[in-house]
Length: 119
Figure (cartoon, rainbow, N blue to C red):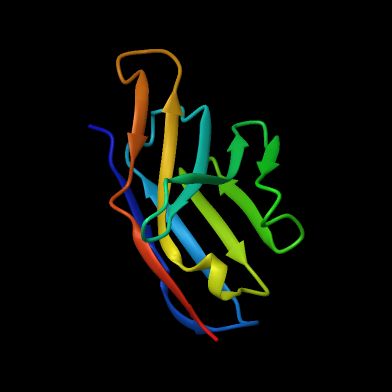
């Protein structure tokens, strides 16, 4: 069974930093692409950053230079280091994983973790 569990959200002042983590289940499961998405109140869910198993990364323009996505393949853990946070970063952040082959092939989501940036 595939499970994604996020942690690390919270309340932070503008200009501050937070680090999100996403623990993915199954030591033998190969998560091809993992990423972070976010959804602010009244808005659609949007891409924040993705990273492939080979560490190829993509970022939304709004977070480039401030956020860093990384992963530990041995631990099946995904991270998002968020610096210089501002009020527009306030959202629920979701971990996403895509498995391209095998019995667990599919797209998976975590339950989300709230990030609130106070000005």
